[in-house]
Image (cartoon, rainbow, N blue to C red):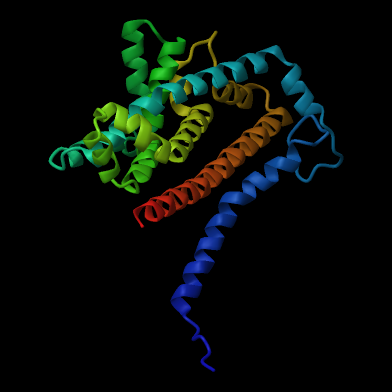
Length: 278
């Protein structure tokens, strides 16, 4: 019986990976119990537990207004970035290979460029237009930030769909848009929904650009959190951070489930196609 040899390199890589994950997760794990503290300041570990700070968040009209604005901006960002990102992904995957590198570079721009640079540029541009703090300004800036993630997700789904299926539909008389809507779109729908969820959570959690393009009257939840940290740091911040963490985890779980659904749906479709061919 052969015993697996001990690989020091693989062991060191796994240990490093777990240390990095631990370094990332420990602050989050500390914030959660702090949100249940009875004290009027942040303390760890909490001496006693309460839901007072969660009730204060939902009872405060200013917090509710900021959360409602963030939800509205995130929903509109999702609705804007999904069709634009889907068209861009289709152009990258199905379009001419000559322009593909330039298109991919443009899509990667918001990911590569520091958000602080994008935030300053948006602020100066919006100031000239007089749209600082407007809903349209928020949505436009967040759509730029969320677009790459939609393009990446939909491109991955499109690359796994055989283009001959569209060609077969067009050979039967369907136009290219109709072939896409009735053949390709159902196959990439789980990937498209994953991109929509990612766009929503990226917009909802975005702090830097939101801080620059907001105004005194129109403040997103992230800007209100920054201001509260500077002026009145209470466990309500920990409570909001816990809720945002739970929301992010829920979105990630939903994306993972959609990917599993996509693989199953594609397997059933290919199996049905193979059965029909026989």
